[in-house]
Structure formats: C-alpha cells, structure tokens
Length: 267
Image (cartoon, rainbow, N blue to C red; front, side, top):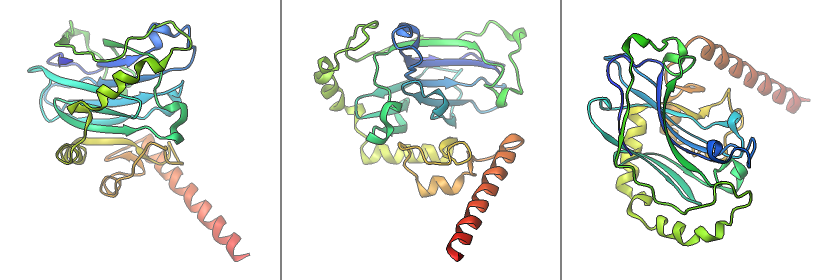
C-alpha cells in the first residue's frame, strides 16, 4: 500500500498496515495469534519519524519480534510504498523498494512462524500508553482530526476460507511457487547491500540483540557482528531508566553464572 501519514503533531497516534487472522477468525483459532505488522509510532513535529516491524505466530505475543527504525524522509509530506512479502519460506518487509528486514523460516521456530490464513487491515488509533517515547508523550486532541491516506493497495495471495478450522494449504502450493519467483521475492546482492545500509543507519532496536528480554537467542535471529557491536545488551542504541536497570540485572546474572561455572570447574 502507498501511505501518507498525518502531519503536524501526532505523538501517541499509531498508523498500522498489517495482516492478521485475529479479527477475522479469532473465534476459530482462539489465542493462536498470527500477525505481521508495520506500525508508525506517532511523531512530534520536527523530529525523525519512527516505526516498527513485528511478527507473531501461534499466540506468541510474549515472544514478539520487534525491530524499530527511523525513516530517512518525512512520511507525512507524500505517499510512500510499504510492503510485506509472506511465503512459506520467508518474510520480507519493504519501504518503497528497499528491503529492511528478512525473517527466514526454520524448523526451530515451530509455531512462531505465521502460517494461518490472514486478512489485511489498516488502522489508526490512540496508543498513548507506549507509542511515542515509551508513552511519555501522549495524544493531544487539539491537533485532531488525525488522517492517514492509503491508496494503490495491491494484494497477491491465495484465497482461503476465513473460518475454516483446518484449511487445506495444499491448494496454495502453486501460488506460493509463483510468489517465490517474483522479482520482489528475491534478495539480490544489490538488495542485500541496500538492506544492510538501511539497518546500519536507521535501525535503533532489535529483539535479536536484547539479551535481557531473550537470554536464549531467538531461533530466527541471524546475528550480524557489525549490528551486534552497535547495540547494547538491551538491543537499543541508546536507553535509559528501566532499560539501564534491566541491562545491569542481565550483566549481573551472567557474571554470577560465570563465577558458578568457574567454581564448578575448579572443584
């Protein structure tokens, strides 16, 4: 979809483009939450816009896989294209034609990889509790109405029965194969280079480097030494408050484990 975000002061206002089965067949797959998100996190005029990508599989809301970024343009001035590729093999998020994130399916992910039939949604809502600067800046309705514009929505996929409890995924094999051969489904060396540059310059949080939230590395995370060197143990470039406290706790726990291991070897 091409999207133009609300202008002026939009702190606390989230605009989202996402695919999910929750709203369409949540009664059938109760608590088995599959979702893929692109969410814009509101903005104070004059500050860089921030957004996040995320994915959930099989009710794994406690194991969300957030990554957060800054945009290199003002998304309220003109339309830009935001895309999600989702196949049985991988997921790729795009801004305009630049790939910004890839998640490759692995056996270790199990049900955390989204596999259920999903529908596409666009929303705009009040997320004052968390969206802008961790919820410190709330929605100011003096700036309302907040309007987001969507156009040129393109949806390629395999139609499924939204309320079928056990859908027949074999019917989608041909469509999956077709999608996987499309130009946008292939990360060429040039595109991988563009994705690497984006992540080096604009990504400021990644769950893959958040060791206090995930002491055991998530199975879909591919650790990039260059990315790892830039991030604190909380997965953030800069952090304060509770994040510092959590990082200290994580560091103390590791030292404790190291001392215990050293003592055990000595004994």
